[in-house]
Each structure stands twice: as structure tokens, then as C-alpha cells.
Figure 1 (cartoon, rainbow over the protein chains, first blue to last red):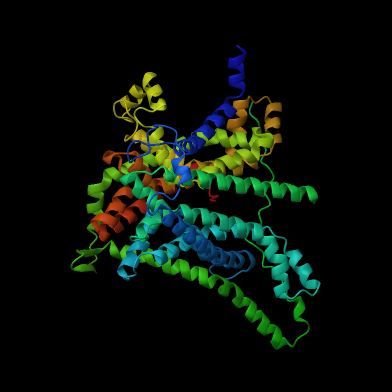
Figure 2 (figure 1 turned 180 degrees about the vertical axis):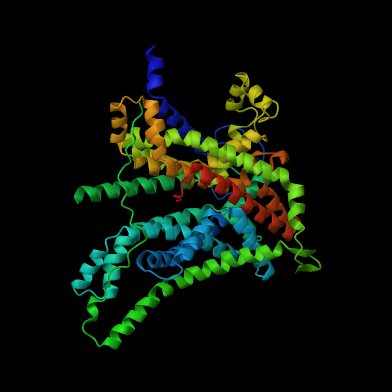
Length: 265
Length: 326
């Protein structure tokens, strides 16, 4: 039996392909059901083909407002977490100081803690300090949990950088500011970019921490959560598919640019 | 005969980081006092760099934790206000009432973690050793789900697992559902709103967290070790058991922790894919906090959850026998 022999020889690859299928299947369902015309309020059963949702993506009340809010929060959270996190990463990678171990532990903890616990405790604090929930509380919470991821990404990069390049710049009479802007920063840029991208994705998609700290403010994930109770508009799938397409396009373009740069070098 | 599994050269990890030389070259030949001042300024730099970020974490991460601890020993109600009375009663009360939820959380997320390892390992292995020029594309496909809101993707499982969906109908026709029902995983002939659906959702949602660390550690395994094992008459499976798998242990440990910890606290899958019989601790904390407004109970539940995770993880790490975290 050649087929059986082929299966035995490629068991691992077949299992890997099945796993990949398991991971991609929901994305395909989201894509397919963005062309559905559901009969009731929920978009769980296929009825018939329609492009209504694609021609009118903002046709649902409040959805695009929540999308805009999510983008805004993700942008500011990325800026905040990237600046604060990069500073910490440089301090940890480049300097020896007392309490380094404690700082490392403090950075690690938020990543190892279940989100509900962080969410509930921050929410309790805001509640008791009589801070009104909304844009600012969400932003504060997002910067808090994105920070550690930025530190990890940037630190990994800075540690692997050759310190002699900066020494060379200084030997060539570069001022500290010039050295930093023209040598250190460009070298650290990939790590900083990775941290920023991760922050953006984490913040944009965060639900649990937002749920406890948003009050009546509705971000996009909060909107999706609410619609799971009230009725899921097809437009949700349109947004999901568009996000997926944009992200994959960015990755492909980034890779093409990288390849061309490599070819030129 | 087993391969002697030569240990690869230890990766040249720079332990910590070296202080970046002494880049005071430009300072020139100033007086000793100027140099001392420069040194003092330099010593201040790391603290200045750390200050804003650490302040943020202290105020919005550490302080809430401490505050939460004090909340868990408060008594009172929304009308009269809450006072710290050193009343630890919330803990046994929470445990007595919600122990099934804790049990479910650990069971579901433990099963999901095991399934993630089982499903994720072949894929990580394929990407690391068999993918060739498809490697980058496959990695993109693994990370790609991150880009669509995970709530939308979890809702898609409602469609996939719906009672009349092609998948469920096929499983029913193959009598697989009878088997899972006998095991108590499903309820009659449906999957949605059963433990199986919740575990399936958890597995799906946290699979990338398992695959990426697995891939990272498998990628570092030297392919020549496989050849060496083969030369020493190890069969492929023996090579895997004695060479590849032990070398991928750091990835296995990191992946299981990255999956187990968030999955135990998760409440989205139980809420969207389960019924009231599948609620986990996260669901209870959420409803105590946002609906019942019983903050001491929510706080006590959070701390018990942390303790449960801490104990499970430390037992696991001791068993797995590796100190190399992250």
C-alpha cells in the first residue's frame, strides 16, 4: 500500500497541516459569514449570499464609533508603553544598579498574572478612589499591561547590540546625543518596532482588562461582546476580515521590503 | 543502543548585560572634580530612565494588588461602605461556594494545555524542520489569527460547533459524539454548550502561545544531531524521544505556562461557548465585580485563583525539572 507508506512517512507533516487547519478555520468562517444575509438578529447560520455588509460597513449603530475609540486607545497606549518601556529596557540592558533583580521581577509579573486578577484589582482601586471610568482609565490600564512586553522585546535587542559600535562613534568625536540618535537608536529600532507592534495588537484586541475598567465606554471588543448577547451584525465579520487582510498585507509588504534590502546589501 | 545525545554548545547568552564600557572618552582631560561630577551624573542615569515606567507599574499594578488584598478582608455593603475588619471569612466562604468553578478552571485549562501541546508540537516541528522555503509563510499563518479580534473568532466557533453544522453532523454520524457523551464531555448529541466546546475554544485561543515558544526552541536544535542519532542506529522515534524532545524542553515549559496561566483565568470561552454548567472562576469574578458588586468576594476569589495557579505551576516546574523560565 503506497498510500499507507506515504502516510506513515509523513505523519508529522500531516498532523502539522491538520493543526494549521484548526487554527485557520475560524478565520475562514468569519470571511464566509461576512457575505451572509442572516434571517434573525444572530449571524450564526448560513442563509444566502449577500454583499450588503461590505457595501455598508458602518451601517450598525455605534460600531464604527467603538472601532475609532479602540484605534485611538491602541495608538496612545502604544506610544506610552513604547516610550516608558524602551527607557526601562535601556536601563536594564546597559546599566548595573541596585535592585535590578527586583525590577526584573516587577516587569515579569504582569505577564505571568491572569488578566482577570489584574483587571479586578485595578478596577477596585479606581472605584475606591472615585475615578470615573472611561477613556483615561482604559488607557492607563492598557499602558500598564503593554509595558512589560515592550521591555522584553527591546531588552532582547539592546543586549545583543555590539557596544563597540557606540564606542567607535564616540572615538570619531560624535557627541553623546549624536551617538544615541545615529547609532544606538537605529540599532535598537527593530526591537522597539516589535514592542510597539505587539502593544498595538494587545491593546486593540484587549477585552478582559477593558471590561473591568471601561465603565459605560464601549471599545470594539466590548461592542462585539455586547453583540454576542443582543445580536451579532454581519458588519462585525467585515471588520474582522478587513483587519486580517490588512495585517497579512503589512507582513507581506514588510517581508518584500526586507528581501529587497537584503538583495541590495 | 541509544544515542549518547551530545549536548550542543551552550548558546552564547550574555548573562545579564555588561555595563557599556566607560564612554566618557569625549570628556577630555577635565579636572578630577569634573570627572567625579560626570560619574555621579552617570550613576543617576539608570534611575532616571527607570523612574517613569516603574512609577506607572507601582501605581497601577502593585498598588491595586495591595489594595485588593485589603479589600478581601473588608466587610460591609455598597450602602454602608466597606471597612477593613481583618475578616478572612470571605476566603472560606468563596471556596465553599465556588470550589466547582475552581475545579473546572483547572481541569478545562489543564486539558486545553495538554491538547495545545499535542496539536502544537507537530506544527512547530514541521515549521522548524520540514517547511523549507515555506517556513515564513507558515509562521505568518500561525500568528495571523492574532490579527482578527479573538472575540470574533470565538464567535465563529459558535457557527462551527452549532447543532446542525456539517462538522457536528459528521461526528454524530460517526458516533464520535456517543463516545464523548459517555465520557461526560458532551451532552447528548450536541457540542455547543458542553465542556468539550469550552475546552475546544480554550485550545484554539491559546494555541499560538504554545507554538511560538516551541518553534523558538526547536529552531535552535542542530539538525546534525538527528543525523548523528540515525548514524548510531536510533530509529526516528527513538531520536525524537532521546534527542529532539529533551532539547525542546525549555519551549515545552514556556509554552505550557503561557497557555495554562491565562487559560485558567479566562472567562470568555466559558461565557460564549458554554452553558451555566461550564462557568469558570473568571466568570464568577466578573459577575461578582460587575453585576453583584460584592468586591470582597471578587478580591478573595482573585487571590485564591492566584494561589491555585502558583501552586500548580511550581509543582509543574519542579516536575519538569527546569529552572530556565522564559
